[in-house]
Image 1 (cartoon, helix red, strand yellow):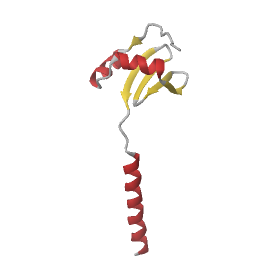
Image 2 (cartoon, helix red, strand yellow):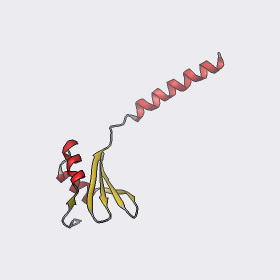
Image 3 (cartoon, helix red, strand yellow):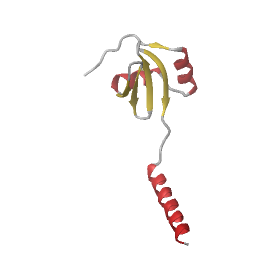
Image 4 (cartoon, one colour):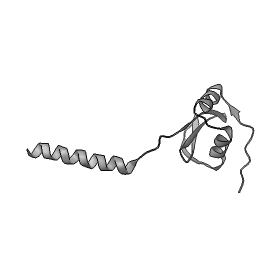
Length: 93
């Protein structure tokens, strides 16, 4: 199923940020058309596709776009366990 998008308007802020963050307009369009809406309120909608996030204003204008940081949950949980063990040892001593 293909969704047809109306002509998109990109704010100056969004254009600058996309250029700084090396995000192509095509990636933004794909995120809006094939991505998932992860947040909605009366002023904006946030679409996600992979790590890319795109914010659309209530008037349909692209407000900004960014990529989420890469996360390493396995490493973080391992480090958290080590920290908890160290803290327990200090309480026991």
